[in-house]
Image (cartoon, rainbow, N blue to C red; front, side):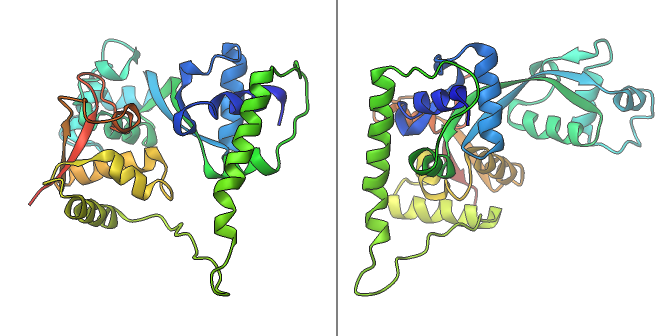
Length: 277
């Protein structure tokens, strides 16, 4: 790990839940920050939420526009998005004539099929993974170029993180009555199991079919990461098994709980999950 990557991580561990908006990581220059973030993601030390900022129609997509729209290998919603490129080769996702709640799914499908390509992707949010926590506390070292000088605060933040890590992990290493510690469940749940978890949490917490999403994140992240859970919830919504609702009054919730919602391009985030009968 080089110095820039280590500085990025040390800045990240000062944030609540080791999570931050990408713009809040101000310790590095823009190019250094992007490179460090991508490298850390490749090593599974962090996870992130990305947003496609610009899309380009491919040659295959242009050919699609010349064909009979009644016999195409795409859905009507996907064709509507492709047709938005009839006058311009490059558009933002918001200009693709797609509904906000289905936009990501439609665009991802068209990219997978080779009709669109993302030419500009922005990192919106980053967080430290369990693997990243372990690495930072037990294995990290640095090499390569860069200023190796750390401020007293950075050093104190790093020491505080290490002490906290070992304080939390020590009890799990102690067996009880000679028995081995319980094994952590790491298998990723299916969409149906996620739906069952929503129903179960709603019943236990008595949320009257208005389950705040942060409760589900607390239960299923890990083994899922944020993007995987969001995508699973969108699939359940598309299958008409759940619906979302936004939060009108955040007085009774913390900033972290509100930020656990699913961001939308306009009008705030989805905050509640309702199961359809």
